[in-house]
Length: 128
Image (cartoon, rainbow, N blue to C red; front, side, top):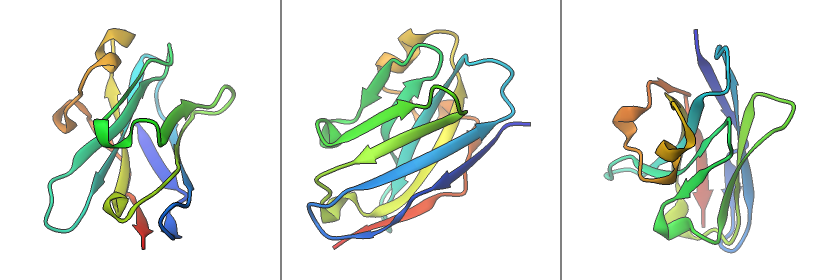
């Protein structure tokens, strides 16, 4: 039974930073991808970044490249999203999600939300 729990959201001024964490339990091996998604009122949920946990391959949506960094813990079943140079357009409910990934090639390209089977409850990020 796979479960994901996010933490680290909050309010920050434009230009500031936040770090989100996603703790994952229930996988028997590391052949899975973790994605971070966000959704603002009136907008569709969009993928922000994802990572192949076994090999570390990553993908970022264009609007966050150079500002956000997704990484995995070496000793914990957790994936972080470090968000720097935040702007008001980054405001939204951020959720992490897990997808079965056979290998890292999947993680090098766009992965749609429909590919992710398990979802956390989300954590709010507000940039003013």
